[in-house]
Length: 159
Image (cartoon, rainbow, N blue to C red; front, side, top):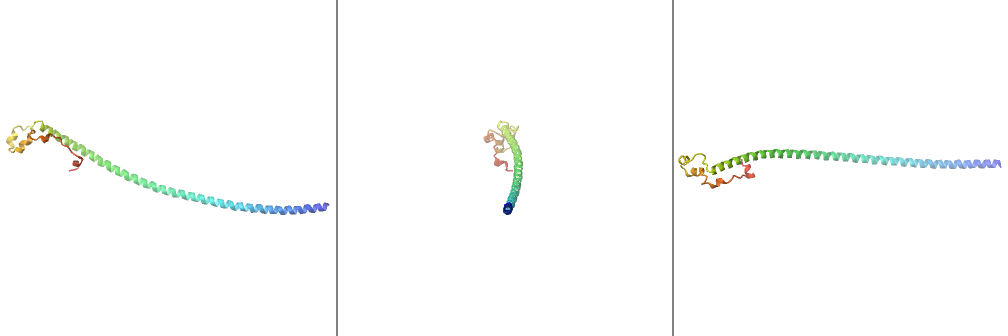
């Protein structure tokens, strides 16, 4: 009996070692599959990471181009603004000068229309024998001189 139990335990050890080998082979196979799967997953992850990096680099390049276009546009707009500001300054000076001229001419007209014949009195009639000259110094004969001189924007640029 002892020998039969010894042989049966020996055969069960052989069966156990056989099933352990099968189990070990199955575990090795699963380990290899998991290792292959992990490698493939890591490869896909690296590819996704590389694609994301490439997308970001393309976005950086696009944003740099847009930034350069905006800088160029701002520079052009600034130059236009400075040109308009210079033109505006010139126009302001011209308006001031023309306003002063207009004011002086209106003063002359008001002086002539006030009956002051320029201090010439009757000497103008004797000095100027022409009726047109006499009528110029007589403000009552030229009623249109009482009107103020008006200038339009179109007249300002008639030099």
